[in-house]
Every structure is written in structure tokens, then in C-alpha cells.
Length: 106
Image 1 (cartoon, rainbow, N blue to C red):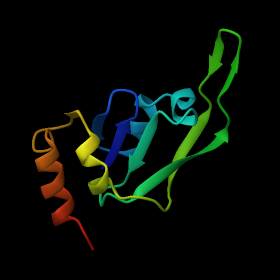
Image 2: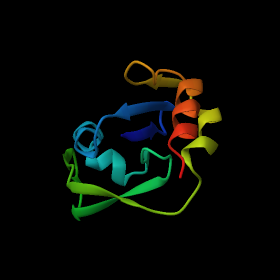
Image 3: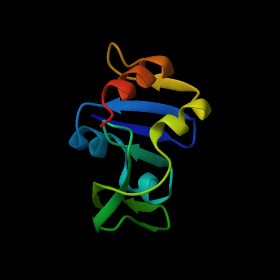
């Protein structure tokens, strides 16, 4: 499970896997800081690019990236700023995400 917050519209998207999150969140937007990622325990993750995203005039390449754990504020501390949630049944509200995180803490 990967949680991703769009910093543009303050929506949190819930993905079943890292591959699903990476496929949805375009590399150029990720490298521009438009997405914050968290694992299934709410621990922050960052994108590490093996092929960087680029922009040359109107041409954009999204690069190739994967997610790795990093320090920072956990997901629970970002939830108040979230305006909307897009996720599967049981993870469609901030309260449902809080409950999920509480059950998945170490």
C-alpha cells in the first residue's frame, strides 16, 4: 500500500502497490515536488530517479524512479491539510486512513 499526496490539489491517492503509484504519478511532476509518498505504515518515502525527468521547451520526459524510505513528517501529520481522498473501499476518508495507520503501526 502506498499513499501519495498531490501537493497541487491536496488530494491523497491510495495505491495497492509501488508499481501502481509510480505508473500514476508522472516522473516530471514527482521531480518537481508535486507528490509526497508514504508507505503502508505512514512513513515518508522519496522518489529516487535512475533516469532523470527532463524538460526541453515543450518536450517533457518523465524519467524512471522508484520509492525509498526517508525521514520527515509521517502521513498522520499531513492529513489535516488533505482536501480529498481517492482510495479503495475502507480508505476513502481521512478518518479511515487514520484508523488504518493505527492498526499498522509497529
